[in-house]
Length: 158
Image 1 (cartoon, helix red, strand yellow):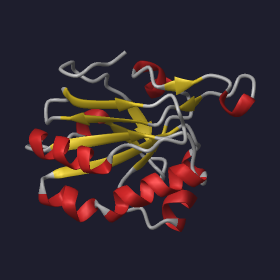
Image 2 (cartoon, one colour):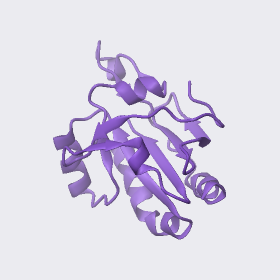
Image 3 (cartoon, one colour):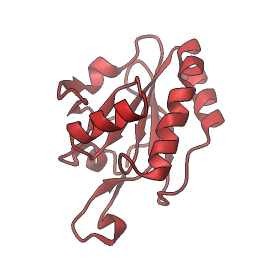
Image 4 (cartoon, helix red, strand yellow):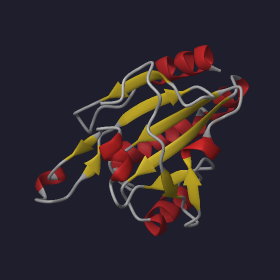
């Protein structure tokens, strides 16, 4: 499990344009990077969460913080999801389930589908050096994070 105060595991995942994006390049210099893992594109709670983060982007920008979404969906699905919901922040594809395993934020047999692994809804806020300054993980996929808490934690980090 990745804990607060620890260096976040590094990864390289494809964005919705199938471009490889490394954690190192995503880290905000002199700011905070919010990694939001979510179970699946086009599901109701995930759509609500990503749209709420989209709607709060101006506030995150004011405090020098950025948002990055991560799901196990393929890049094409993530692209359609981002376009349909006007998401302007990166949505990364963890189709090999590498990042969810490194961060230990995954559901096995998700939705009672044997062998299907999805991300747990979780948020990690990283400083410019990739150190975790805030962590929230839910075993309940219907539970959303406290958005005000995310903004406060991002402001403290930035």
